[in-house]
Image (cartoon, rainbow, N blue to C red; front, top):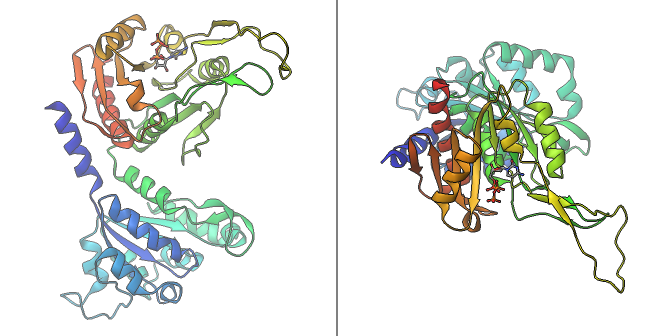
Length: 405
Ligand code: CTP
Protein backbone atom coordinates (compact mmCIF):
# COMPACT_ATOMS: atom_id res chain seq x y z
CA UNK A 1 0.00 0.00 0.00
CA UNK A 2 2.75 2.41 1.05
CA UNK A 3 4.76 1.46 -2.06
CA UNK A 4 1.75 2.06 -4.33
CA UNK A 5 1.39 5.56 -2.88
CA UNK A 6 5.07 6.26 -3.57
CA UNK A 7 4.68 5.16 -7.19
CA UNK A 8 1.58 7.31 -7.75
CA UNK A 9 3.36 10.37 -6.30
CA UNK A 10 6.07 9.82 -8.89
CA UNK A 11 3.71 9.72 -11.86
CA UNK A 12 1.96 12.94 -10.69
CA UNK A 13 5.33 14.64 -10.37
CA UNK A 14 6.51 13.95 -13.90
CA UNK A 15 3.46 14.84 -16.06
CA UNK A 16 3.67 18.58 -16.89
CA UNK A 17 2.49 20.91 -19.63
CA UNK A 18 5.55 22.41 -21.29
CA UNK A 19 5.44 25.38 -23.61
CA UNK A 20 8.59 24.92 -25.71
CA UNK A 21 9.97 28.05 -27.36
CA UNK A 22 12.45 27.64 -30.20
CA UNK A 23 14.58 30.56 -31.37
CA UNK A 24 16.77 30.79 -34.45
CA UNK A 25 20.01 28.92 -33.84
CA UNK A 26 21.38 25.80 -35.48
CA UNK A 27 20.73 23.93 -32.19
CA UNK A 28 17.04 24.13 -33.19
CA UNK A 29 17.60 20.74 -34.87
CA UNK A 30 18.13 19.24 -31.40
CA UNK A 31 14.76 20.62 -30.28
CA UNK A 32 13.01 18.04 -32.45
CA UNK A 33 14.58 15.29 -30.36
CA UNK A 34 13.91 17.34 -27.22
CA UNK A 35 10.20 17.45 -28.08
CA UNK A 36 10.18 13.68 -28.54
CA UNK A 37 11.99 13.06 -25.26
CA UNK A 38 9.72 15.45 -23.32
CA UNK A 39 6.71 13.53 -24.58
CA UNK A 40 8.38 10.21 -23.80
CA UNK A 41 8.94 11.46 -20.23
CA UNK A 42 5.15 11.93 -19.94
CA UNK A 43 4.90 15.69 -20.57
CA UNK A 44 2.51 17.51 -22.91
CA UNK A 45 4.32 19.84 -25.29
CA UNK A 46 3.13 22.90 -27.21
CA UNK A 47 5.68 24.56 -29.49
CA UNK A 48 6.16 28.22 -30.38
CA UNK A 49 8.89 29.35 -32.78
CA UNK A 50 10.51 32.58 -33.88
CA UNK A 51 10.49 33.34 -37.57
CA UNK A 52 14.26 32.64 -37.72
CA UNK A 53 13.81 29.25 -36.05
CA UNK A 54 11.49 28.19 -38.89
CA UNK A 55 14.42 28.70 -41.28
CA UNK A 56 16.31 25.90 -39.51
CA UNK A 57 13.46 23.43 -38.90
CA UNK A 58 9.90 23.65 -40.17
CA UNK A 59 6.87 23.98 -37.88
CA UNK A 60 5.50 20.81 -39.49
CA UNK A 61 8.27 18.80 -37.79
CA UNK A 62 7.25 20.04 -34.35
CA UNK A 63 3.56 19.72 -35.13
CA UNK A 64 4.06 16.05 -35.99
CA UNK A 65 6.24 15.39 -32.93
CA UNK A 66 4.16 17.30 -30.37
CA UNK A 67 0.73 16.44 -31.78
CA UNK A 68 -0.22 20.11 -31.29
CA UNK A 69 -0.55 23.19 -33.46
CA UNK A 70 2.71 25.15 -33.69
CA UNK A 71 2.46 28.92 -33.31
CA UNK A 72 4.94 31.38 -34.81
CA UNK A 73 3.00 34.61 -35.11
CA UNK A 74 1.77 37.10 -32.53
CA UNK A 75 -1.15 37.83 -34.86
CA UNK A 76 -2.26 34.21 -35.30
CA UNK A 77 -6.08 34.25 -35.09
CA UNK A 78 -6.41 30.56 -34.13
CA UNK A 79 -6.32 30.74 -30.29
CA UNK A 80 -9.93 31.14 -29.06
CA UNK A 81 -9.49 34.71 -27.81
CA UNK A 82 -7.04 35.49 -30.64
CA UNK A 83 -4.37 36.29 -28.05
CA UNK A 84 -1.76 33.56 -28.39
CA UNK A 85 0.68 35.47 -26.15
CA UNK A 86 -1.73 35.16 -23.20
CA UNK A 87 -3.55 31.90 -23.81
CA UNK A 88 -0.54 29.66 -24.53
CA UNK A 89 1.35 30.56 -21.37
CA UNK A 90 -1.72 30.28 -19.10
CA UNK A 91 -2.06 26.56 -19.76
CA UNK A 92 1.66 25.78 -19.26
CA UNK A 93 3.48 24.65 -16.12
CA UNK A 94 6.75 26.03 -17.52
CA UNK A 95 7.94 28.00 -20.54
CA UNK A 96 11.16 26.37 -21.72
CA UNK A 97 13.10 28.17 -24.46
CA UNK A 98 15.60 25.84 -26.14
CA UNK A 99 17.62 26.96 -27.93
CA UNK A 100 17.75 30.49 -26.55
CA UNK A 101 19.97 32.61 -28.82
CA UNK A 102 22.06 35.58 -27.64
CA UNK A 103 19.59 37.90 -29.35
CA UNK A 104 16.62 36.34 -27.58
CA UNK A 105 18.39 36.52 -24.20
CA UNK A 106 19.01 40.22 -24.85
CA UNK A 107 15.32 40.74 -25.62
CA UNK A 108 14.16 38.79 -22.56
CA UNK A 109 16.55 40.68 -20.27
CA UNK A 110 15.13 43.99 -21.53
CA UNK A 111 11.45 43.06 -21.59
CA UNK A 112 11.09 43.36 -25.37
CA UNK A 113 7.72 42.28 -26.82
CA UNK A 114 8.21 42.31 -30.58
CA UNK A 115 7.37 38.72 -31.49
CA UNK A 116 5.37 35.81 -30.08
CA UNK A 117 8.13 34.27 -27.91
CA UNK A 118 9.29 37.51 -26.27
CA UNK A 119 5.69 38.63 -25.70
CA UNK A 120 4.75 35.25 -24.22
CA UNK A 121 7.73 35.51 -21.85
CA UNK A 122 6.63 38.97 -20.74
CA UNK A 123 2.98 37.97 -20.30
CA UNK A 124 3.53 34.57 -18.70
CA UNK A 125 2.47 33.48 -15.23
CA UNK A 126 4.55 30.26 -15.22
CA UNK A 127 8.33 29.86 -14.61
CA UNK A 128 10.69 30.66 -17.49
CA UNK A 129 13.65 28.40 -18.27
CA UNK A 130 16.23 29.11 -20.98
CA UNK A 131 18.77 26.74 -22.54
CA UNK A 132 21.29 29.06 -24.25
CA UNK A 133 22.99 28.03 -27.50
CA UNK A 134 25.59 30.12 -29.27
CA UNK A 135 29.19 30.39 -30.39
CA UNK A 136 31.68 30.52 -27.52
CA UNK A 137 32.77 34.13 -28.21
CA UNK A 138 29.13 35.21 -28.27
CA UNK A 139 28.61 33.35 -24.99
CA UNK A 140 31.56 35.13 -23.34
CA UNK A 141 30.64 38.51 -24.84
CA UNK A 142 30.24 40.85 -21.82
CA UNK A 143 26.79 42.17 -22.89
CA UNK A 144 25.57 38.56 -23.16
CA UNK A 145 26.91 37.75 -19.67
CA UNK A 146 25.21 40.91 -18.35
CA UNK A 147 21.92 39.80 -19.91
CA UNK A 148 22.30 36.37 -18.31
CA UNK A 149 23.00 37.90 -14.90
CA UNK A 150 19.92 40.11 -15.28
CA UNK A 151 17.74 37.14 -16.26
CA UNK A 152 19.00 35.12 -13.27
CA UNK A 153 18.30 38.08 -10.97
CA UNK A 154 14.77 38.21 -12.45
CA UNK A 155 14.22 34.57 -11.42
CA UNK A 156 14.78 32.95 -14.82
CA UNK A 157 16.34 29.47 -14.65
CA UNK A 158 19.28 28.79 -16.98
CA UNK A 159 20.06 25.25 -18.14
CA UNK A 160 23.65 24.95 -19.36
CA UNK A 161 25.17 25.75 -21.73
CA UNK A 162 27.38 22.72 -22.33
CA UNK A 163 31.01 22.69 -23.36
CA UNK A 164 32.37 21.00 -26.48
CA UNK A 165 32.73 21.23 -30.23
CA UNK A 166 30.33 23.65 -31.87
CA UNK A 167 28.59 23.72 -35.25
CA UNK A 168 30.84 26.67 -36.24
CA UNK A 169 33.95 24.48 -35.79
CA UNK A 170 35.17 26.10 -32.54
CA UNK A 171 35.30 24.38 -29.16
CA UNK A 172 34.19 25.75 -25.79
CA UNK A 173 31.18 26.91 -23.76
CA UNK A 174 27.95 27.73 -25.57
CA UNK A 175 26.55 24.43 -26.87
CA UNK A 176 22.94 23.76 -26.06
CA UNK A 177 22.71 20.89 -23.57
CA UNK A 178 21.74 17.56 -25.07
CA UNK A 179 17.98 16.84 -25.08
CA UNK A 180 18.28 14.13 -22.40
CA UNK A 181 20.17 16.53 -20.13
CA UNK A 182 17.47 19.18 -20.54
CA UNK A 183 14.71 16.65 -19.77
CA UNK A 184 16.63 15.48 -16.70
CA UNK A 185 17.09 19.04 -15.42
CA UNK A 186 13.46 19.86 -16.15
CA UNK A 187 12.21 16.87 -14.17
CA UNK A 188 14.51 18.02 -11.36
CA UNK A 189 13.12 21.55 -11.63
CA UNK A 190 9.65 20.22 -10.79
CA UNK A 191 10.78 17.84 -8.02
CA UNK A 192 9.80 18.62 -4.42
CA UNK A 193 12.78 20.18 -2.64
CA UNK A 194 12.69 17.62 0.17
CA UNK A 195 16.43 17.88 0.84
CA UNK A 196 16.81 21.66 0.51
CA UNK A 197 19.76 22.89 2.55
CA UNK A 198 21.17 19.38 3.06
CA UNK A 199 24.59 18.15 1.98
CA UNK A 200 24.61 14.62 0.61
CA UNK A 201 27.69 12.50 0.00
CA UNK A 202 27.36 9.30 -2.07
CA UNK A 203 29.59 6.53 -3.28
CA UNK A 204 28.76 4.74 -6.54
CA UNK A 205 30.07 2.19 -9.00
CA UNK A 206 32.60 -0.59 -8.53
CA UNK A 207 36.10 -0.34 -7.08
CA UNK A 208 39.23 -1.60 -8.85
CA UNK A 209 41.93 -3.45 -6.92
CA UNK A 210 45.15 -3.69 -8.93
CA UNK A 211 46.93 -7.04 -9.28
CA UNK A 212 49.74 -5.57 -11.37
CA UNK A 213 50.27 -2.60 -13.71
CA UNK A 214 47.60 -3.76 -16.19
CA UNK A 215 45.32 -6.20 -14.35
CA UNK A 216 42.92 -5.89 -11.49
CA UNK A 217 39.92 -7.23 -9.57
CA UNK A 218 36.63 -5.43 -10.02
CA UNK A 219 32.91 -6.28 -10.23
CA UNK A 220 29.93 -5.77 -12.57
CA UNK A 221 28.46 -2.72 -10.82
CA UNK A 222 27.46 -0.16 -13.50
CA UNK A 223 27.03 2.82 -11.16
CA UNK A 224 23.50 3.39 -12.54
CA UNK A 225 21.76 3.17 -9.14
CA UNK A 226 24.28 5.43 -7.39
CA UNK A 227 24.20 8.03 -10.17
CA UNK A 228 20.37 7.94 -10.22
CA UNK A 229 20.36 8.56 -6.46
CA UNK A 230 22.87 11.40 -6.80
CA UNK A 231 20.58 13.04 -9.41
CA UNK A 232 17.48 12.47 -7.27
CA UNK A 233 19.20 14.11 -4.25
CA UNK A 234 20.28 17.06 -6.44
CA UNK A 235 16.74 17.41 -7.80
CA UNK A 236 15.43 17.37 -4.22
CA UNK A 237 17.54 20.47 -3.55
CA UNK A 238 20.59 18.90 -1.86
CA UNK A 239 24.21 19.90 -2.47
CA UNK A 240 25.65 16.63 -3.77
CA UNK A 241 29.15 15.17 -3.86
CA UNK A 242 29.57 11.85 -5.64
CA UNK A 243 32.63 9.71 -5.00
CA UNK A 244 32.64 7.42 -8.01
CA UNK A 245 34.51 4.26 -8.86
CA UNK A 246 35.37 3.64 -12.54
CA UNK A 247 32.02 3.56 -14.39
CA UNK A 248 32.60 5.43 -17.68
CA UNK A 249 29.43 7.43 -16.93
CA UNK A 250 29.49 11.21 -17.53
CA UNK A 251 29.38 13.47 -14.45
CA UNK A 252 25.80 14.64 -13.90
CA UNK A 253 25.11 18.40 -14.16
CA UNK A 254 25.51 20.36 -10.92
CA UNK A 255 27.02 17.45 -8.99
CA UNK A 256 30.61 17.54 -7.73
CA UNK A 257 32.27 14.26 -8.67
CA UNK A 258 35.45 12.84 -7.16
CA UNK A 259 36.88 9.96 -9.22
CA UNK A 260 38.58 7.07 -7.42
CA UNK A 261 39.65 3.52 -8.27
CA UNK A 262 40.44 1.38 -5.21
CA UNK A 263 38.48 0.94 -1.98
CA UNK A 264 41.33 2.65 -0.10
CA UNK A 265 41.09 5.69 -2.44
CA UNK A 266 37.32 5.69 -1.99
CA UNK A 267 37.63 5.58 1.80
CA UNK A 268 40.15 8.44 1.76
CA UNK A 269 37.93 10.59 -0.50
CA UNK A 270 34.87 9.90 1.66
CA UNK A 271 36.66 10.77 4.90
CA UNK A 272 37.96 13.99 3.31
CA UNK A 273 34.46 14.99 2.17
CA UNK A 274 32.31 13.77 5.04
CA UNK A 275 32.91 16.77 7.37
CA UNK A 276 29.71 18.81 7.08
CA UNK A 277 27.65 16.13 5.33
CA UNK A 278 24.09 15.57 6.55
CA UNK A 279 23.47 12.32 4.67
CA UNK A 280 25.88 9.62 3.50
CA UNK A 281 24.53 7.12 0.95
CA UNK A 282 26.82 4.18 0.28
CA UNK A 283 25.79 2.66 -3.04
CA UNK A 284 29.23 1.57 -4.27
CA UNK A 285 29.97 -2.11 -4.67
CA UNK A 286 33.19 -1.90 -2.68
CA UNK A 287 35.62 -4.79 -3.00
CA UNK A 288 35.90 -6.53 0.35
CA UNK A 289 39.50 -7.55 -0.39
CA UNK A 290 42.55 -6.04 -2.07
CA UNK A 291 45.69 -7.68 -3.41
CA UNK A 292 48.41 -8.01 -0.80
CA UNK A 293 51.21 -9.03 -3.15
CA UNK A 294 50.45 -6.45 -5.87
CA UNK A 295 53.16 -6.18 -8.51
CA UNK A 296 54.31 -2.76 -9.67
CA UNK A 297 55.10 -4.15 -13.14
CA UNK A 298 53.12 -6.43 -15.41
CA UNK A 299 53.46 -10.01 -14.22
CA UNK A 300 55.13 -12.11 -16.95
CA UNK A 301 53.92 -15.59 -17.82
CA UNK A 302 56.36 -18.12 -16.34
CA UNK A 303 56.70 -21.72 -15.33
CA UNK A 304 54.90 -21.14 -12.03
CA UNK A 305 51.24 -20.10 -11.91
CA UNK A 306 51.14 -16.90 -9.79
CA UNK A 307 49.18 -16.85 -6.55
CA UNK A 308 47.19 -13.79 -5.61
CA UNK A 309 47.11 -13.11 -1.88
CA UNK A 310 44.22 -11.04 -0.57
CA UNK A 311 43.82 -8.85 2.49
CA UNK A 312 40.74 -7.12 3.84
CA UNK A 313 39.67 -3.64 2.71
CA UNK A 314 38.21 -1.11 5.14
CA UNK A 315 34.41 -1.08 5.41
CA UNK A 316 33.74 2.52 4.36
CA UNK A 317 30.09 2.60 5.39
CA UNK A 318 30.74 1.09 8.83
CA UNK A 319 33.62 3.55 9.34
CA UNK A 320 31.39 6.56 8.53
CA UNK A 321 28.46 5.22 10.58
CA UNK A 322 30.85 4.82 13.52
CA UNK A 323 32.15 8.44 13.43
CA UNK A 324 31.35 10.45 16.57
CA UNK A 325 29.26 12.99 14.57
CA UNK A 326 28.09 10.52 11.93
CA UNK A 327 25.73 11.78 9.20
CA UNK A 328 22.43 9.97 8.56
CA UNK A 329 23.77 6.81 6.88
CA UNK A 330 22.00 4.85 4.16
CA UNK A 331 23.45 1.50 3.10
CA UNK A 332 22.73 -0.90 0.27
CA UNK A 333 22.76 -4.65 0.55
CA UNK A 334 23.32 -6.71 -2.58
CA UNK A 335 22.46 -10.31 -1.74
CA UNK A 336 22.03 -13.35 -3.93
CA UNK A 337 19.90 -15.29 -1.42
CA UNK A 338 17.97 -14.84 1.87
CA UNK A 339 17.61 -11.16 0.91
CA UNK A 340 15.65 -9.76 3.85
CA UNK A 341 17.32 -11.82 6.55
CA UNK A 342 20.88 -11.02 5.38
CA UNK A 343 20.06 -7.38 4.69
CA UNK A 344 18.48 -6.73 8.08
CA UNK A 345 21.48 -8.39 9.78
CA UNK A 346 23.76 -6.06 7.77
CA UNK A 347 21.68 -3.01 8.78
CA UNK A 348 21.98 -3.88 12.46
CA UNK A 349 25.68 -4.79 12.25
CA UNK A 350 26.56 -1.48 10.54
CA UNK A 351 24.08 0.46 12.78
CA UNK A 352 22.17 2.05 9.87
CA UNK A 353 18.85 3.90 10.16
CA UNK A 354 18.02 2.96 6.54
CA UNK A 355 19.16 0.17 4.24
CA UNK A 356 18.13 -0.60 0.67
CA UNK A 357 18.04 -4.34 -0.02
CA UNK A 358 18.20 -5.73 -3.55
CA UNK A 359 19.04 -8.97 -5.29
CA UNK A 360 22.54 -8.64 -6.76
CA UNK A 361 21.83 -10.77 -9.82
CA UNK A 362 18.70 -8.68 -10.64
CA UNK A 363 20.07 -5.21 -9.83
CA UNK A 364 23.69 -5.00 -10.96
CA UNK A 365 24.05 -3.50 -14.43
CA UNK A 366 20.27 -3.41 -15.05
CA UNK A 367 18.15 -0.32 -15.85
CA UNK A 368 15.35 -1.37 -13.49
CA UNK A 369 15.52 -2.39 -9.87
CA UNK A 370 13.22 -3.90 -7.27
CA UNK A 371 14.18 -2.98 -3.72
CA UNK A 372 12.96 -3.30 -0.14
CA UNK A 373 13.65 -0.41 2.24
CA UNK A 374 14.53 -1.54 5.76
CA UNK A 375 14.36 0.88 8.68
CA UNK A 376 13.54 0.81 12.40
CA UNK A 377 9.81 0.66 11.55
CA UNK A 378 10.18 -2.50 9.42
CA UNK A 379 10.19 -3.48 5.75
CA UNK A 380 8.87 -1.32 2.88
CA UNK A 381 8.86 -3.19 -0.46
CA UNK A 382 8.76 -1.13 -3.67
CA UNK A 383 7.64 -2.38 -7.08
CA UNK A 384 10.09 -3.03 -9.90
CA UNK A 385 10.72 0.33 -11.61
CA UNK A 386 13.40 2.21 -13.56
CA UNK A 387 16.33 3.13 -11.29
CA UNK A 388 15.50 6.87 -11.54
CA UNK A 389 12.08 6.19 -10.01
CA UNK A 390 13.54 3.87 -7.37
CA UNK A 391 15.96 6.68 -6.51
CA UNK A 392 13.17 9.24 -6.13
CA UNK A 393 11.21 6.84 -3.90
CA UNK A 394 14.30 6.31 -1.70
CA UNK A 395 14.78 10.10 -1.41
CA UNK A 396 11.14 10.57 -0.35
CA UNK A 397 11.51 7.85 2.29
CA UNK A 398 14.83 9.23 3.48
CA UNK A 399 13.41 12.77 3.74
CA UNK A 400 10.58 11.44 5.94
CA UNK A 401 13.09 9.81 8.32
CA UNK A 402 15.51 12.76 8.48
CA UNK A 403 13.64 15.29 10.65
CA UNK A 404 13.21 12.80 13.49
CA UNK A 405 16.98 12.81 14.03
N1 CTP B 1 30.43 -1.27 1.88
C1 CTP B 1 31.45 -0.37 2.17
N2 CTP B 1 32.74 -0.82 2.25
C2 CTP B 1 33.03 -2.11 2.06
C3 CTP B 1 32.00 -3.04 1.75
C4 CTP B 1 30.72 -2.57 1.67
O1 CTP B 1 31.18 0.82 2.34
N3 CTP B 1 34.28 -2.51 2.13
C5 CTP B 1 29.03 -0.76 1.85
C6 CTP B 1 28.35 -0.87 0.51
O2 CTP B 1 28.49 0.34 -0.22
C7 CTP B 1 26.91 -1.11 0.91
C8 CTP B 1 27.01 -1.89 2.20
O3 CTP B 1 28.29 -1.61 2.71
O4 CTP B 1 26.21 0.09 1.21
C9 CTP B 1 26.84 -3.38 2.05
O5 CTP B 1 27.66 -3.86 1.04
P1 CTP B 1 27.59 -5.39 0.59
O6 CTP B 1 28.65 -5.64 -0.43
O7 CTP B 1 26.18 -5.79 0.28
O8 CTP B 1 27.93 -6.11 1.93
P2 CTP B 1 29.25 -6.41 2.68
O9 CTP B 1 29.27 -5.53 3.90
O10 CTP B 1 30.44 -6.34 1.78
O11 CTP B 1 28.99 -7.92 3.15
P3 CTP B 1 28.90 -9.26 2.22
O12 CTP B 1 29.89 -9.07 1.11
O13 CTP B 1 29.26 -10.30 3.19
O14 CTP B 1 27.49 -9.37 1.76
